[in-house]
Length: 280
Length: 314
Image (tube, rainbow over all chains, first blue to last red; front, side, top):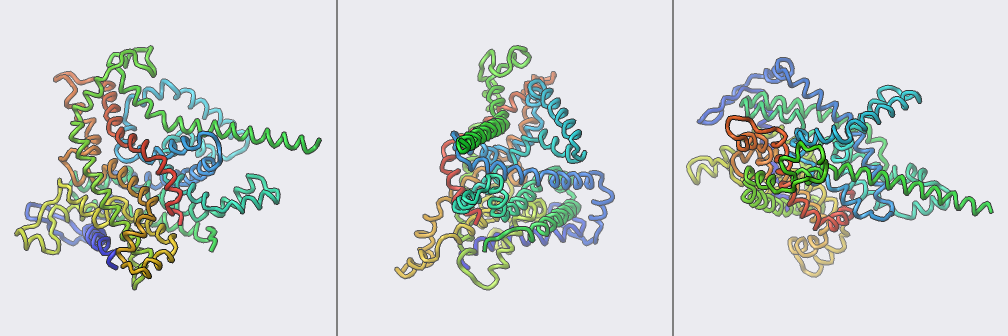
């Protein structure tokens, strides 16, 4: 009990009480002045304002949610694939691993947002690879369409190719988790399956995949939480709070946002809970 | 004969796969490293190289002007020192308090400990934006259950000091602390109980066991958490721009860099060339992440190995 005490104090002081306070603020109008703050209960006015009056809230929310829904499967699949690759033995494996974990360190917070506005990057990319890559995806798209794939699938995949940097840079932690998970699978399983004549492809689907399925769940949750932590929505909430000083509206927005995240998490949980394979 | 052919087919397949794998990994590594190379190349370019058609990667006039300019605008050395002090202190406090909490959750079962652990999970899931406003107001008029009013007569304003960071990290509620508690809990659960029991039998107390038996065993997860929390604190703009509006910390400096550049680099009436500004901005980013890259070069071997044994996986 003593061990948890510091955390418990912090939890109450910096999480639980603020959480309740935020709920209360979201239902009130707040006047902040030199003496402090005056809170006046106004019911759901802030929520109505956010959802029906505010011009940018709905759009930002929908954008944030669709972006997460698009990116999460890509990131999870991509990082599982890379983890399997990086687990195999080949010369230069150590270097490759440290390069792939580099984004964990570099691509977060301000750096990402500054990078997206960098003119030099934009110009260089246009001059260098831009023309070629657009052409490449275009041809690939045609090829896939002709081979009878459905249209949304094609645009999804080619979109993924175009956003490869974003995806790579967001999957560092996930690769780590998968890699660690793959290494806990006992080698006997693979040996036995090779004896029985299984190919590497079969071994992946019959052994690796079920064994890491709990981690797919963990990674899906992590990716969702991670990508919800910083996007257009959070900046909107912050601006409403600290630039316009409308604390009530800001809290209401934050709660709607949280509710949206909770719904998505619950959906993911529902999908995974039955499918995940636990050894014990 | 048949066996021989099968063997060679197998070999061809293996070679093919090795080539495909090499291309994939080399390509993706390139995607990751490309922006860094680009920044390094940009940083050494002279202003005149920007519009030279000859220069793509290697600058014609190598110069350190960009570095000088970026360092001046960012106030580099004091900023570096501040950021380092802030990140290092929060990192150490966070790691200690999270290790304690993780151990508590892993081993000491008591009534409601599961409920409290659900609280930890909740701190991971709730986006920090949701509680930002109340925490901000709370820190602005910080009054620990009326204690501060009793001592000094009025609540204290903790904004623009390092106190918010120190307090939250001491109490294991700083940036992503829930995740660290989770990592530690998983790891401590993986250590066999017999080790502790042996220590108890030999007369070690609960705390002594933790400090002398469990912590040395937890070095892999300690390294992971130390590195993660250092890096994330270093790069964090969410809390720093809220709590520290005027202090010089790397991430606040970075986020105000475009504005500062536009203010300070332009020569009075005429606006500065946006490409030139962007060039200095890139140099600034490079300067900001340079210490991290240096640290990573030193610890990466240890880090990559240790993560595999951290027990994130349970």
